Length: 267
Image (cartoon, rainbow, N blue to C red; front, top):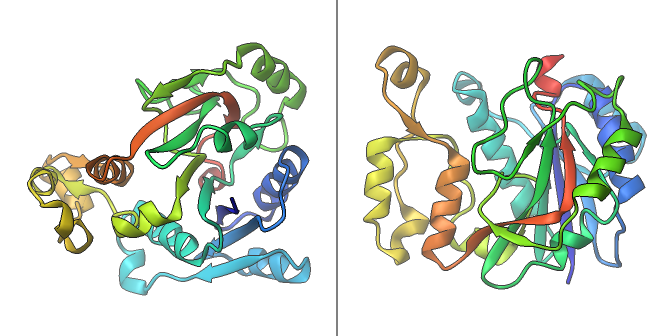
């Protein structure tokens, strides 16, 4: 089993250094595994650092028209670029504002099979500085630092060891996630944005063999903020499409990861 670890990076050399160091401190790579960044509309400092330090990466640039859309649309496009470049049988997606604990990846890998995708259990910093963790996502709100400068690594590792459980529980948050590349290919990867509710209703009626060519109607900011229309997040659409091909979403309760929330976007 070969694993491709994919992490997006945007504009912060400091977050790049932090997540790269954390990843290699707590992650055992086997022969054939790979780690790389996807530089998503990255600033010159990030690109220079990646090149000068010989860090494996791919560059993804959105068009000027795409950059006018919601930022999340460009994120989903970058995830898809990273997934398509993966040499591994399985992909583990990461965010740049995460810190890891012992065996976090092993406890994802040992729970993956041909009928599931598996996420880590997150401890998130939460309010007042961060966002509430998603209801039903098995996350825990506890602040071990707002950024790389004040991260309480010792405190997080202690709590991570205390709450570990070998259980595999249905549903969860969306990253870090391990998924079989073949399954992503079958459903044509992530939708490139959040979709309108009526479009999601049409997706539910879409025959299985038509998922790959389904025409998404992406929600605009005007749809949500001016017209008051709702939308369905791309992550949720991904999980729905996976469920249609028999792939269920689970959380590994002994893969514990800290999520700072809004890392690069807060700088």
